[in-house]
Length: 339
Image (cartoon, rainbow, N blue to C red):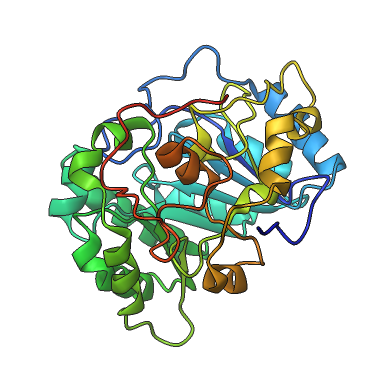
């Protein structure tokens, strides 16, 4: 039995789904179900700025915005400006709406980085996965405009069965964009990805082998959550949805809700008994390689463990070493919710 090596009173990283609006509403691997227009229940500008004040006052270091697509929210840059200088600031976007003028505005704010989603490294694959012809060219152009404006761009891929054979092309894409890092992210069975699991879910052993085989030039880092870098990151992370629900992690969407920050101070939701359990509990076993490589936070992802085993204290079935024979390419008949 092992435990995380550190327990925090405040998360280091808070991710926020600042809007559920997106211009690519039918992505096969999306983690949510986006809308063309802002839902009436989305948090207002004043609610976001009040939350930003609260997080800054309570020692949060890193603030990260995603969507939907944050750039589809009309006041998003004002929210960024309000948060700037108090956090390490990131956001994630498809970049389809980036213009030269918008890229300059973003650059002027001052950000740690902008993560840009590339579902494929060719128009054919990317546009198939988004369901929107021409979306690859728009994303590429947006990423290039951000880079030209001096913004640090991190291209990211949600690794799936279709783009798995082409991961080396993401390395080349990172070089093209002058990136310091390329993200290779896990596919999770939530949102649209759950509905398309049979088509998209890769074998984790094949993913691990493909990443290990990459030819990565010096100076370029590969960010990934696969063996042997598979952390139990609940101890350091938090996530808040566009409607104010505190869910701990975006990959626990639909499985847990620790309370709404419109009604309950965020740190009270952080002390929810289940949330505390996920940060401090013993895990039945852990992979020594992952423990060594990822901040000594053993056991892997709690979302994956619960999805495929129904247990919060199980090892992550995506780990080829400790997966206990669970076939994660086959979705359980029923995905559990918090008990």
